[in-house]
Amino acid sequence: MEQRDSIVDTQGEYKVSGNLLSFGSTVKLDGSNYEIWCRVYMMSVKGHRKKHVIEEEEPLTKTGKYSTWEEDNNIVMSWIMNSMQTHITPTIAYYTSVNSVQTHITPTIAYYTSAKHMWEFLKQTYSHDKNMSKVLQ
Image 1 (cartoon, one colour):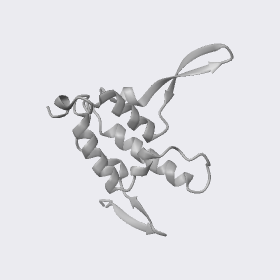
Image 2: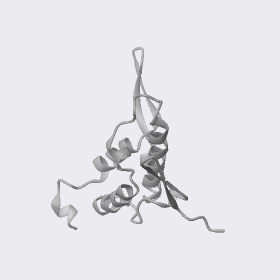
Image 3: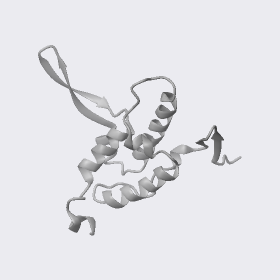
């Protein structure tokens, strides 16, 4: 039997149930189409009331509404990962961070833990928003 997506109102907050991994963008980010990918992706994110995850930092307090933020964050991160070409996925799956341990600085492989940071990296890496001729190509 086919599972259908449904929307449930719980005290004024809407939760979408069903296969949330199928949302995101039908346009796959390929490295040269950031602007159109971004536009289509954000329409989906806004339509599913998840824009706050991309705009806001992770809550400092890990209680209360944190579990809702964490769910939404993981959903949006999966949408990002699923809406890009496979050759781009490794650039967003991991990143190198520098940890200072006493006097030694060691680069380590880490994971993005927030959709906001993933989003900012993709914009910085692939956007041509300062070059209008590239945007209009």
